[in-house]
Amino acid sequence: MASLSPLLKQATPVVVDYASGSWIHGTDGRDYLDFTTGIGVTSTGHCHPRVVEAAREQTGKVIHAQYTTVMHKPLLELTDKLGEVLPAGLDSVFYANSGSEAVEAAIRLARMATGRPNIVVFQGGFHGRTVAAASLTTAGTKFSAGFAPLMAGVHMAPFPYAFRYGWDEKTAVDFALRELDYLLVSRTAPNDTAAFLIEPVLGDGGYLPAPPAFLEGLRERADRHGIVLILDEVQAGCGRTGKFWGHEYSSISPDILITAKGIASGFPISAIAASAALMAKGWPGSQGGTYGGNAVAAAAGCATLDVIRDEGLVENARVRGEQLRDGLRLLQDKYAAFADVRGLGLMQGIEFADAAGEPDPETASAVQQATTPRGLLTLTCGPAGNVVRLIPALIVTEAEIDLGLECFGHALSDVLAA
Image (cartoon, rainbow, N blue to C red; front, side, top):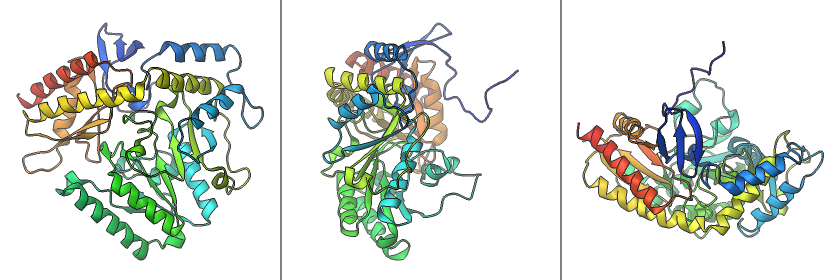
């Protein structure tokens, strides 16, 4: 008899019977408000009728049409629809299956386009679990330990994590940019550096928005040194932050943008976008993949983008995100261990610390576990595991946010008032 790998850790004991909107209905007969959304994937909620219908219709036409062999209409349509929301000038798209694959495609393109070997990443970034993507990931040792050697040519610079340093945001930004400049004179010369790779909001690294001034500093240095700026929008993109792309809180535009997760409401598809001129600098045959740009996933992606536009979900994420953050800050006033609240839109993180200000993963884990019996599904993140993250679907209602806050407050009381 076969079983799942024991290396897989379940965040909750819930077994899903069916799911709809913001709700998961368990085989135990209970209903759970889902503030995990498959780690930010089910952007339009579970089983949105328009996404379901698009996938159902496409399944009856063609499921798999390998897109370097024959082209299919859903991928062409998805490319057109992405063109309506991508930053200006990013007019060439390559599709894969997962965020990790898209990250690897992005660094491959940057290295080929520049003829340079090195990639600079930022402390706390998560970029995937495949070997190259894990080599770029600094959100925790669990993602890269135990299977060395990793990919060479990766250098890490500080992220302006103001709360961790105990500084104001400007001081943290100034420090991080100074350290990046020092890295470029001490470890990887600009003419050896192909790309800067950063998430506009750290995901597994703790739900930390990159300050606009920091992204603008990266853009200036990238332009000055001919370095490709890659933004990993896998988790922050597609409306999650209250803007369509997480970097839109700054004035910059990337050279390469990576998207996945919420782009197809649960169907596996990812993409990188760049200018046609930059994409053309890749070597012929360097992009491809058997399942990349799958027809059913592409049809679901088209429907997802239509739903996000037609139902005003980016604005809903902004408004409901403010409601969620305001409610969390009221709860923060009641508990000393509830040390920080931060995030953008429907991407909110709660950091727990002990009396000495040190990370408190035990309390974070206990709170996350306590939310499930209260009918709310949550996750932890952060290198120390001391951050609880809340990731509602973009369709979440005012009443559901209020209910989620009520459940979270009860879980806090269960743990911290015990």
